[in-house]
Length: 606
Image (tube, rainbow, N blue to C red):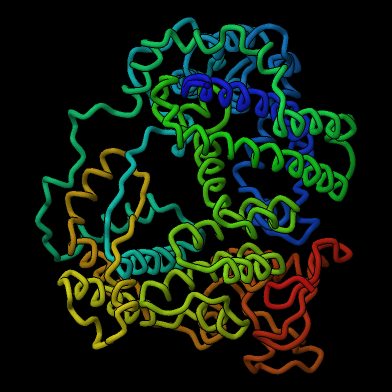
């Protein structure tokens, strides 16, 4: 009978094999991304920003595509960097380490950087790269010239998202989490773009500090300065395990002999990737888009299998036995993935295991990873039947990711009030988007009152006598945040319930302001954002007449829609988009040059 360590060792080798196959896709993806981004290929498909294109066409984030393009640029500048991906007997570097090296190294220092990457943790490499870049910025010297040893001082990471954040989890009544999300959406509308939760919390704290309210800090909720940081824990694990050398011993030959469906998948992907690798980075925007989508299809297959392996390892509590702090640390250090990639793939695999409809749709490519992630959020803690989940999945297959994100948020908001979370009709979606002055204020007040009422066990919430409705409203759920340590400590010191409720109410009272222009009627109806399919722009908004006034169009609301400057001037008037019909629900959009971006009505493909 196999022992637990045997099972974990087998899963570890299988993860290595899958990532090895995935690594083959890195260079062609980087070359195609480099060529696509350098030519701003997303304009061809009618998108204003790289993030909108990546989300809607590729099922990935804009940062994913930008990082790949940066890696491709680094490989063009340092061709020898590509050799570090080959299985030449030395430990291959992953995509994260390769990106860090490409930002810092020169031809003269490349070998030293690769050697450093193979001899230190990814976190240490990131901090060391930040030091080198800071030195270059301060002195004008080449970033790769002073790399003999990392400084003993902790340096900021190259990217804020890669810093060592504090994971904050608050257990709050479900209505209070819905109020938090509503105020976050208001903050995005004020900023004119999508914002992270960390930046929203920072704005919330700033508003609290500037206001008249005087919250009493909660010492119990603050982040302890004496507690070991995540970085300290991981440095200790690296030291104790001698950088996990025992795991590397004889691993490559054993991994290559793995059998089973996952191993067969890895070999099949390698076979299918050969032609794509030869063509990668060549052609116009349409050809590059086709290359990226084909390579991502292969990567999705591998990542689904890898997610299942990581989820299985998590069930067996493998991380402590392998001397890693968690799935993110294991994925980054052992597999060369980013932490967020490893964590998200393991998480979504566990959700898909309970949702056959979601798993089947993603496996067949009918919905991409971004859409699957939104549905997984909705399904994770809901009590939906298999039929209800299948309805949501089928709906998601025909709409943009932007609309799906809206509908999932709407469904979760309705659930916080004890109401059904069914898919929305076009009219219901449009009504939920409507952002008129005072609407957020009214909604947040109502949600905070519900949250207050649920603090008393057995209280009849809102006079409603349905016990199921009360149970849903009374349920405490997790509000999860990743914040810089200092911000986390300040936030937690002020948000011991009901402090968070008071902070949210104060924010909306200040910022849910009245309109100042007559034309704001169009923006209010359209939610103060561009109505072009897939576009999340909330700044530089313009009032567009669908039938031009020069051709007899009137000023009625049905003949006007809200567009960002790009979709108005370069889209409609520049030939990258065409919109006809009547607003708001009967507009037909043809996106991209020659319609290559597709046709839509109410963010639904037609």
